[in-house]
Length: 232
Image (cartoon, rainbow, N blue to C red; front, side):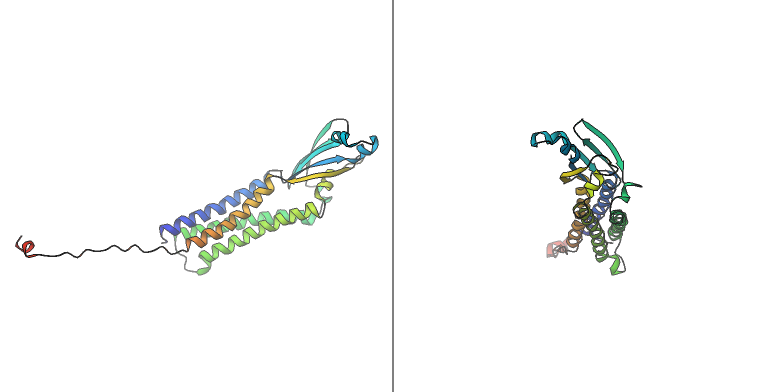
């Protein structure tokens, strides 16, 4: 059985892995990966709007991996519309990259549970195989954190290189052309970053658990027997 010191740190490692699992689920469910401002370029060109008037033509957009919302501002007030990525919008995007992001996150979910299982195993017993010990915990956390980081990098590539926001904003638009004037990553994106950070923190936790504790030696006092003690 592992000592209380290692049990405490392995317990923390399992908690961090499970937290990463929950964070990824939240990031997948909440449609707030990115938000931005979109300019109705067609409306601006029609009225030849100047800088003070551009505010009337700037709308909002936010989206996640499955759905989102857009507010069109083309000079006649805002028009709000909801959209879903699947099954039609994904065809206008870089389909392979978007599906890859989802697959990576689903894989990260499985790896997070595996890393948690290894931490629990080491908390309740000392594994016979070295691969199931601290090295195994580190291996699965490196894989899980790396997969999440790869999903984050892929999403950033879709936004920057493939103009993801602009493609979504102009989906099924026949009369108006929208231009993205501002983009910012939102809470779901940063939740994924936190998930990857949890696995990185687990590496530190496992390293600390391997620090040997100094042994506490109790000093045994030798009993001295005198002549008076023998008489009694």
